[in-house]
Picture (cartoon, one colour):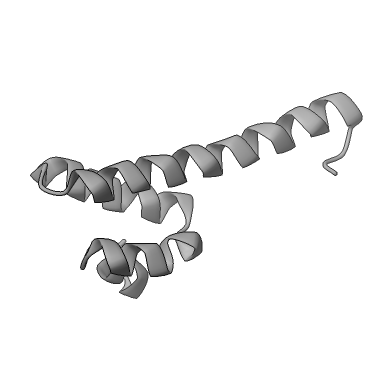
Length: 73
């Protein structure tokens, strides 16, 4: 899964902030697993957790809208 975005995201908090909106859900989880495994940078771990939650929130809302309205808005 390692690619230029994940490599850059894990360089530093500053680099993470630059690319975090471009990361896919899988890339976020990949970075999160690596950082959580080392337990070194809590700020990066927390930012990745927030991004994962944001991505899941969007998916959840889209699924609910489709269920209720029949199609996503």
